[in-house]
Length: 476
Image (cartoon, rainbow, N blue to C red; front, side, top):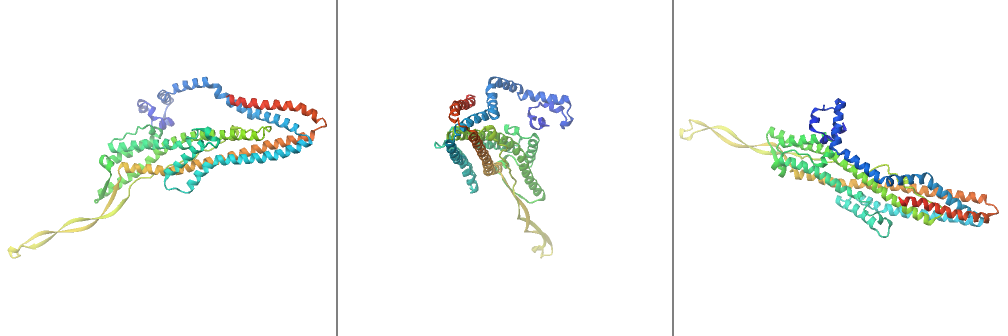
């Protein structure tokens, strides 16, 4: 069924002619013929070969980084934390050092909370500004998108903030407009050319993304409009029709219904096309936000360890960057034209008898007097194809604000989740260090100075171990 609905254009016509309409009736041989045709026409074999070569060439970089990260999450981070915290706790377990270290922990906790709060504010601030612009409900939808683009560009170009290193990695957060616009324009262009030329041709690449049944329904609707006269000059320039007779009124009503049908079928096709484009754009947005969050976590981790170098604070990306949803984007359209009631004057000849004067009015003849009677008509201003489809473009621009709103709402939700998880991990690490310090304090003996001489070299080795684990990630 997916092959018939989504890839019909890739299946040879000779095969299609032999197939039953319902896929449930296809035999095993029919399915194999369709599969072989799709395999050849879609260049699947070439793609599979290229994929094999790519994996063979880049296998270490494709696999090893993930393996290292999994190892670090499962063991490496825990080993680093245990080694650094245990040695630091023992070296600070004397009565005098213990009190100082407790005060230091309180200071570190406060300092890190302030650091995380400022960092979170810097991350969310540009997107909250966009949210505020949306709340003000600007009349110009282009202004909303322009503000989105400008704010993101300023965010990644601000010399005072660390996000300049991201470069163009946040482009997908505003690049979707170009992709959506191109998809809509290509579909509308195919419809316009079909109506203006009187020949239905729906072969634009964008339409390949739509369900073939929806495309066929759209094509049938266009043919009916053409048969009703909505083509050539009428389609190019539009027309005002005054329907006086019942036949004219029926035709006008049918034309209006077909234009509304056009809206419905075009909606279905647009939804298919835009769904594919939005899904692709959403994937790129997802990757873009992952890049943003990974960079943010790396910045936080560096800052946190500068404040507390011997506590081994780690923010694992795969544990913290959990974006489970995508922005919910929907675009709907309407079309058609109104039919209004009006009146017109109909000329009527009324017969009457009159006498002829030169026969002394003895003879009579029939004469006709002209009268005008008011009749009801139905008027319809039929839009040109350009006006009709321009209205769809206007509606698409109106939808941009809702798209921006969906993206920003989604993004701020992810930032809130990230902040909560980062704060929890930081608190857990500090709590574990305090526990280790308390344990070391309880177990301290009179030979503290001797133990100190033993544990200082071990702390240096623990620091070297932490550096080695970090170098593994950087190397790959």
